Amino acid sequence: MFLKIALRSIRRQKRRSVLTGLSMFGGFVLGSFFIAWADGTYNNIIDMFTRTRLGHIQVHAPGYVDDPSLYTTIDDAGAAAAAIEATPGVESWAPRVFFAGLVSAGDKSSGARIVGIDPSRESRTTRFERRIVEGGTLSPRAAGEAVIGSGLARNLGTSPGDAVVILSQAADGSIANDAYDVVGIAETGDEMSDRTTLYLHLEDAQDLMVLDGRLHEIALVVDRLGDVGRVTDRLRDALRPLGLSVEPWQVFARSFYKAMKADKQGMWISLVVIILIVAVGVLNTVLMSVLERRREYGLLKAMGTRPRQVFRIVISEAAALALVCVLLGAVTAFGLNTYASTHGISLGDPISYGGITIEDMTTEINLRSFLIPALTILATAFLSAFFPAVMAARTAPVRSMRMH
Image 1 (spheres, rainbow, N blue to C red):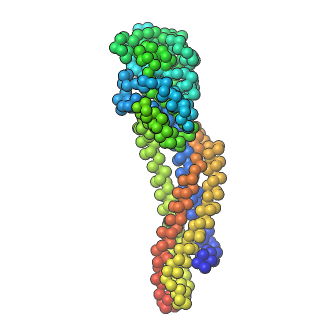
Image 2: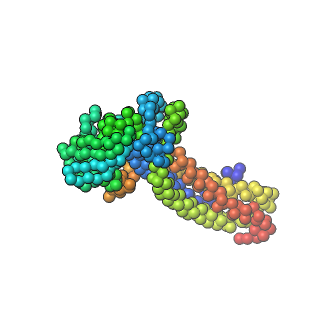
Image 3: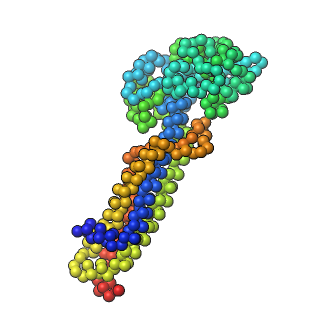
């Protein structure tokens, strides 16, 4: 009965109902789009940053993340690799070693961060070959080759075909000193990294530093960014017997994670503004409706209708209108978000973010992009109608029935 009366009231004031419905409908569509856009854009940035550089998950010896050291190594790399291969959800992985050294070319020299990589696995994991802007990448087998960062190459005046000498201190305390042929120039988009980084084949780096097959890091990427947490838990269980530390990107890329989290707060500010606009529209409509129909509510109470029943009539009217708008908004938002997720929104001029170039922004279709706006619109409609409903429930029958 209450729903029937509410629907009749909505049809009776068509213009007012349409205007209020449009504010709810527009609020739902905008809210859904903002959430889907924020999730899609930020998840895309996060996936590009982690997938092309650090990996989604990293495995280290305990304490390495907080205090990197040449001597803090993964000793049983074979067992760790076997456990990783057997873990569901892991797309690919890449072993690495890191150390600092002095790199010389002719009469020029510079301090550098040397990274030992497996070229094949690194390309599958972080698309290393795409960073090469001149020359080629490292050979699949160790061949005394080096790929040098573009900034470091400029400082040393080197190019593919030249030779560089690396001087450092090996893990056994001896002097590590050897020459390598430069086969390529790499550019990551991060100027600091490109000025200081040189890449060697993993076996060459291990031989130079007398690491005897030990590793400093294993970087992994998973099938889906949303599966990082679950895969991390599985890896921790699998690698616990080896005493290794397994951390997701939120831990080892903490600064990047905090920046993304802070930047994403802007989405919630936009959502609050939309909620306020919808709330004001609903409050104005319901309040005007109650004031115009006070005589009607007084007649209902004179006929024996209880205050709580009058209250339910007003609330049902707002809830019914909100529910219709949410259903229509969900259909429209789904179409809009689907189009934006498939075709993207071109930015015109690409944006550089942390060395990553973004040419378009896409939405991500997920449950929360529909659930949050739906609950928000329904809750806003209820709260906005609450005060007018209380006024209607407290209507004095005698006084209101004298009104014209």
